[in-house]
Image 1 (cartoon, each protein chain N blue to C red):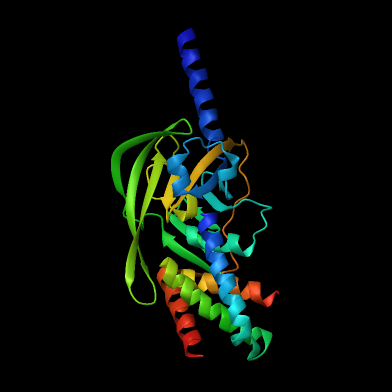
Image 2: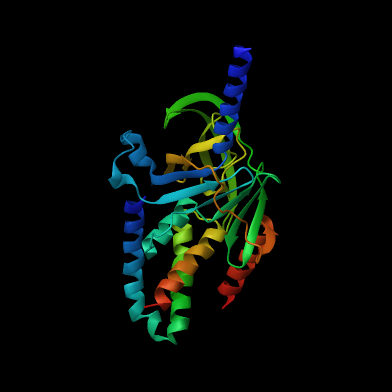
Length: 69
Length: 225
C-alpha cells in the first residue's frame, strides 16, 4: 500500500513543485493552499476512483499539509 | 452427588470464562493485497504498515488507529485509500455503527451491508473463518460505482464488529480485504473488567446519506470559486 502511496505522493510533490511557479504566486498563502488542495484532490480522486467523501478527505490532508509549511 | 457438583463447577467456570471474553482488545494490522498473496507468514514486521485496535465490551466497541502513531501526509493519504475513515463505534444493543468526521457523528445500521455468505473456509490466527463478500456502492463526481469487499469472519467469537466499521456477520471479522489492502487480526487480549468505551455525545448525529449530501455541496461550492 505504502509503495503505491509513495509513488502517488511523488506525483503530487512533482505537481506541487511545478505549481510553485505558476499558481503559488497569485495570492495569500491560504488562497494558494486552497487552490493547490482543490486541484490535486480532484486529480487524485479521479486517478484513484475515490468517492466524493474521500476526495474531501484528500483535500483536507493536502490543505493542512500546505498551510502548515 | 459428586457428579452434580462437578457439573455445577464446570458450568460456573464456563460462565466465568465466557464473561471474561466479553471484554478486551483485538489488534489488527494492514498490508497490501499483493504482499498478502505472496507472504503467508504474517510475522514479517516489515509488512506491518499500520496498527489498529478494536476495544470491545458486551455493549460497545471502538475501532481506531493505535495510540501514539504519528502520521505523515503520505500515511494520512494511505489511510484514506485503504477505506479507513474512523474512529468507528459499534453499538451492539441498538445495532448501530457510528464514525466521527468533521463535527458529525455519522450513523448507519450494522446490517446495512448486504453480505453474501459462502462455505469457503480458512484457518486464520487459530480460528476457523468463513468468507463473506459484498459490493459497496459509492458516488464520485461523475457516476455511481462499486468496490468489492471480502471479509473472513469466525463464528467462534460472537463480536459483531470488524475493521473500518464493517460488521453484520455472525462473528468477529478476522481479516478484511478491501481496496487492495488486507487488514488482519494479530492478537486478542481479554480483560476481566470492561475497558472504557463510549460514543461521543457532543456531536451532531446524521446519516451517511445526509453527510454525503453535505460533502457534495462543499465540493460543488469549492468548484465554483
